[in-house]
Length: 246
Image 1 (cartoon, helix red, strand yellow):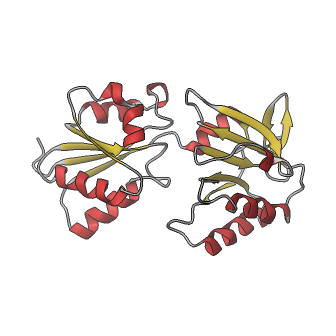
Image 2 (image 1 turned 180 degrees about the vertical axis):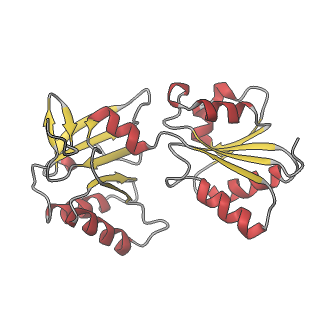
């Protein structure tokens, strides 16, 4: 065993084994301890037999990451899991920042996963075939004025836009403001895809447009993808042309 211990920051994608990489499965298999948000731990419970499992709730990210480092510094192999990809709003950044701050000597390996944007896009067709921006509407860690500026710049630049964390019970107006900003630069008929629980058992897919998108269910389990000026809908699929002559 490596005396310094080992941390795997594992992206579990949507959370079922069919959409996890072999590297992710192997990392969890090789770990003595698996740590994560309780919802994500529940998604992979079939992989955790015989392992020490530590879970916790929302807003405990720093605590989970410090605990991960603590366990690895005991010489253990530890996996901390993120849904989607750990480097996209996940635990990779927190782990690396804390390892640096603590001057820890543990080894860290980041295992990529299918992001929510990728999963949602595949259920919609091919909306992300050209330049796109991923923007979280959660203002818990980022000031809302900064988020609005990013939405404006992405809309003005004709980027396809994937919105994460679009709406919660305590944050219902941000998606309305985001839509209003984008409408200044896009036609109201611009295709919009709304995917809840992408690639999970209760997946729900809606294809609509910018004008009508707010008439549909949107929550924290939803990714909203807004097309660019060339995006169109054909046979129930959202398509953004890459530019090939076809």
